Image (cartoon, rainbow, N blue to C red; front, side, top):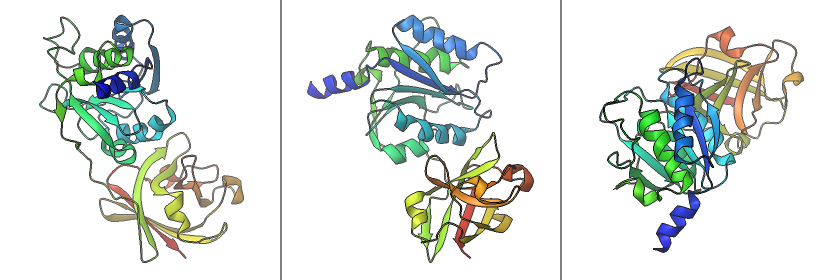
Length: 289
């Protein structure tokens, strides 16, 4: 009984945060929020983003890891990037060890947040109970009919976490990628995401791991980038604290706002100039020059 009360309290801060690949050109996002408001008009509804590239599960996973830790315990996230909508992939709610809840298809979206915050419990959504009324014949908008509805009910306290559905093993579908490692003086990692407004490359290599190279500001790094194992870029650049530490148009390595090793051109787009993208099949190696 005590465990049930704890789950109920943790999931009742009445905050729901949405992300999707729907864009804002039509009414899909508004429909999800309308369903949530129909559950309880007291809910506070926010967004991560709805500009995830279509079907890009990896980017959905990254945006959760980028955002979730900054929200209060008990916040419910509804993440809908679901190219397998209507198929046999599971619809789940993950409770992290940090006390957040993510409502999503278990299709790889949970890869990074399950790793960084840990898995406290996972439940499969019981659609016999947790599905919008009269939506049984709708097969292609689970974001509205299942995820927004279930997330809102959980955040509002209409249901407890246990009432989401049956418990599942503490594991999720994961997207294979290069984890951040340091071996023999060589850092390896993934080009996890682009800082899309500016074309900077953000890796999954943490500041703590990078610090083990013992390189001072101004020191030179050799950077090699691969796509599906094929080298697409090799260059030497300084480690700098900020963009203005190098001349206009010149490359630099720096720590981004998430304290992860990143690469940029001062007032230019590294990604566009060298035709580099991001995701689980983009990797990087870094060593002191």
